Structure formats: structure tokens, C-alpha cells
Length: 188
Image (cartoon, rainbow, N blue to C red):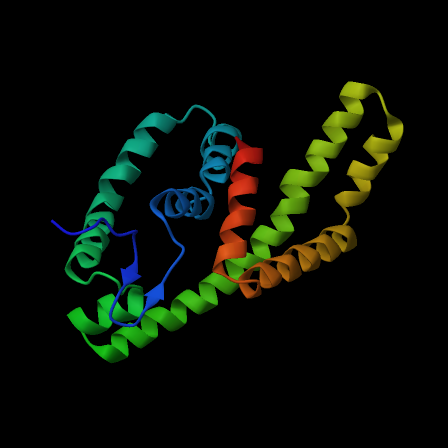
């Protein structure tokens, strides 16, 4: 038996990626937005659908999502070290369908990146600052929370969040994962 290799090592090209198993796990936790999903299901779900059984809704969603998740897991097992919708759909159905799916992803991810950056302020930062102000009986924090709810403040902070996200994609994988590790520890 040969020596144990780190995940995603390609000896043929000499390319060694820094995506170790713990880093990939943390990356997936961040990108599935687990806390955001819990906020939607348990806080907004109770507000927007009073009397609904959220556990039944979560169970039904799980049942309908399992085939898709299983399919992608099988694609990942059958086509290791490659991936993404273009590759999976293009190889299994047709390359033009793979392109269309990938293009749709670009459009939708652009939308969700912008909405997520806006939601960071409107649904995250502003309520947190207002709540701190109310708890500490600090009128300045309450006023700041109200200011952060304004359209222009939310837009400006969203622009900064998107700019920082762009910088994170430029700094390189090793630096990105180091920052991700720090953010993961902070979030825990």
C-alpha cells in the first residue's frame, strides 16, 4: 500500500490543491448557509405560515431533494476530480444542455449574491445592532440600527460585501481557506 495522499492531489500535473477534507467540510457548511436556512424555516416560517407543521414541511422537502442529492453524489463518484453542472449534465445528456445549466447558474448565483449581500444588512446587521441598543438601552445603537435599515445604507454595505467577496476570490485558495478557518471558529 502506497503513502496516503491528501484530497485532490494530482501527481500527473504536479498540481496540489489545498482543499483538505476539514476545509471542504467548512466550505460546504458556509455555502449551504445552514444558519440562514434555519432562520427561514424556524423564524420566518412561523411568521409567514402560522399553524403550519414545519417538521412535516422539512420532511417532505427532504424526500423531494434526496434524488437530486443522490444523483450529484453518484456523479461525483463516477467522475472524480471534475465536477460542476456543465461537466455532469454535458457528459450525461448533451454539452449544449450542460452549457445552458451552467449559464443559468451564473444568472441565479449573481442574483443570490446580490440579495445575500443586501440581506446581510437588512436581515442581519441592522436587527443585531438595534437589538444590542435595546438590550443595553443605548439610543445611539438603536438609531444606527434604524439607519442601517435605510435603502441607501443597505445598498452601500451590500456593495462593500460584494467587493470583499470579490477580493476573497482573488487572494488565492490558501489565503481564502485560512480566512475561512478563522470565520468558522468565530461563527462557532
